[in-house]
Image (cartoon, rainbow, N blue to C red):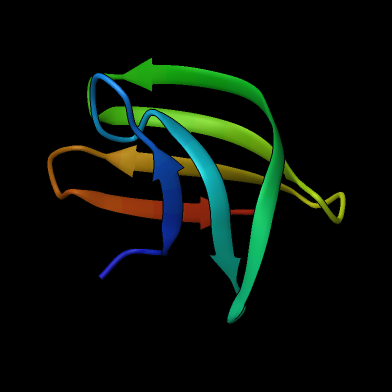
Length: 70
């Protein structure tokens, strides 16, 4: 099971992360600072409302999110 990311999806899944769960705490996303696509899925660099920065990646093949701090 992957990490938990809440997202807003309009025309396709994993459209824009709105919150991440990190160490058991829900953190709201204040800004998406960058986004990119790879053959495996979509990546985002987000800043949370408390100022933390995370890279989140949605792997389409496994339908799974991963979260890391750069």
